[in-house]
Length: 374
Image 1: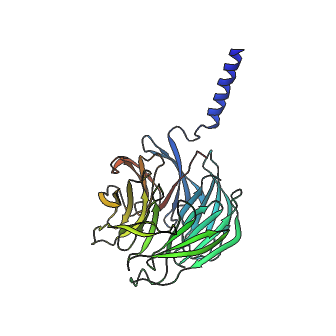
Image 2: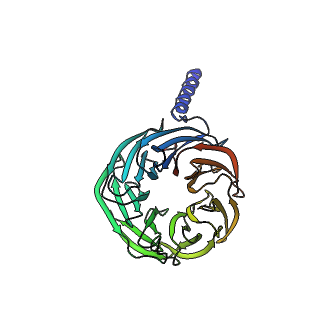
Image 3: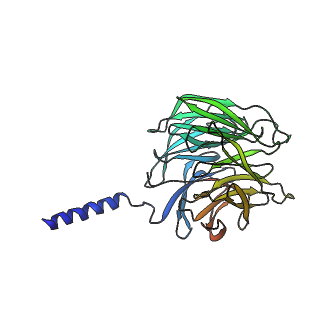
């Protein structure tokens, strides 16, 4: 009787392991890449990162789409969303179902409501997307079915107003990102053209403006990120190259300035800061700068920020970058370098070093990892 019980347990364990086996191989994590398609790219690509070596393999196109410049993933429901950065004459927002075994994408829905230069999309909460439209200077909230990925006709569009001191870059509103806070209550829309971050709140299926965070004239807010513990918001400004860190006020919006760090890259070059992310442990911030091409590593301690490294090797006009879920690698999308470079990350010191691994791809601008845990 004991032998039968043992055999049954072994078989059950074997079946369990087979059901949870990584389809891409041990120690490997899949990710998607958004690109600009003017220079030979086909659209959205899929690849796999080896979290032991840093090698990228299996690069292939999985969706043919014009300028999918930013991606977002609903990890729980296996849906990928992409904005098509165009002149407003075509569809701007697309949804795809993800095949978790292969990484293949199947189109679920698309919508075109005349948005101009959609450049950012995020999952504000399950069933709700936030989209930033750069040239038209507005933010859209779009509901979707978490089961099918199809879009609802229930949409809300908020037009920003104002301008900044830079007569070339800030002649009008330019919404550049729309990021939900860790609690999913507020969405923060950085507007490069008006030197402000507009805060939106989701209340009982309704979206409403909930406040404005103003920054220095000519700063040009671009991207932002929240610390893993949810206590701080870091804002990267594109035009004056600074990182501004905020904490929450009484209304739970991140409007109280804590510290500001000037990145001060080489001013002899036409610099534009691009992307910012916290490390998974919250001890470091990383920011990409184009022109004086680099990834800046910032150490955080007691609300103080200190630059510990300016990493430049293999960095050519870096756009978006992503830290692998394993924490030990950082992948940089070199738009003008036409490749993705893999950097080894020291999880204790925050510093970066070359792995020697790159993958060639035309005009990559966005990297999003897909979780196999759900």
